[in-house]
Length: 507
Image 1 (cartoon, helix red, strand yellow):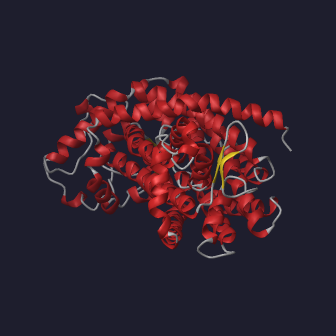
Image 2: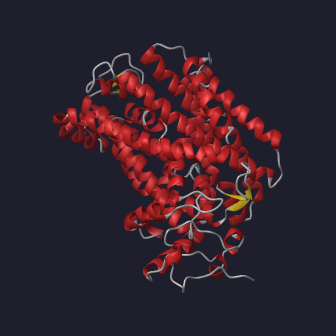
Image 3: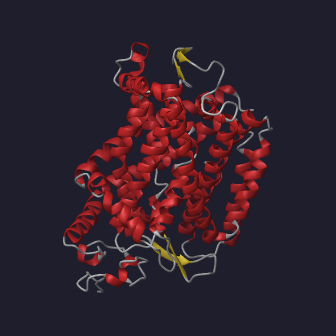
């Protein structure tokens, strides 16, 4: 067991890191929203079109595969346990601020994806089934976009340690908790199963990892969404009062919760940032892996993934708890403002109780299975991120021992995460994610001009009726070496492209 004072101190450090940072993400999202003229609202049809038309090229994923990989990290247990935490700390009003943060903050995800595509590289495919593999992400656009190689190395080291050796514990801790409540299993039981499943995939290489996530994630997302809507439907009479409670508590107009209106904002913003990964850079690596003819296209796809996560999955989770009345709201000074579930800890247990209103007695089992599968998909995405960061640090070297060490280390934390204090694991995870996010957000401020340039180029070509193609030399963007070579763009529109499309310029 982790001593209580250590856990409390760790949580205090996490709060110190996150409380101001969540608002920085919101502010930067507002700046990018203005700078791109609200691209997240204007270009929704283009988002759907890119998902439909992208087929992936040799060495790259399709936009749909990249979307599935991004959702694997976003639609994890944060969409279940994280939403419950937000309601428990900030009241139902936190849901409204989650939605607002998702809508504004998704332009940060747009910027990250554009930059990841712009400065990505190709490496030898470790599966040895294709000649090259597209990779990129935070360390790449920091190094090549800002010419800050030491900062890029720092973020890569944090990425390897965090996503390979720390953050997987967040997922497994929640999995163990839900399975213990549902089936009375010891915490190490599901950990053994998950460790085995993860090993089977990560030792199969990137190809197997991508194939598993592209099938698993859509099934999970839509299956869980359907279940949530069924719970909301069975409690339809409570929908008007639930929405009223959410709005009133968000603005401090609910008498019982008037004293925590600020907490509603804080928890809503914080959990939205955590769940969507905007500013955290998690989705930058899958975004770079997509094969597309213009960075702006993948920026739109990443924006769409935030909509699926925050506006559909998270909102469905939250509304399910509120309409069924299966939630508590904690008083920071001790006790509860609202206590509908005496003795039931915050987290997936609240969702289990909500589902019981639809199928009495089945809630714990439904949620336990959902958390297991969501967590498993998220673990795969985490490993992909950690491995990409390791490839950046290796810089073309083989590093077979380090790659094996990363796989074994990931399996170790997947197992041990089940037996460590859940509060301690989440606090450590918050600290790690927060440190990565602060570095990333600082860099995104300085990369604003490049994002604007990429966005304007996409807009001009789209308005001219062209299928946008990217030419960094024409735009004066340096170190975008990937785009100086002709590639198979993996688009159904490629064979029908206008002959006047801009072609990469050579020096």
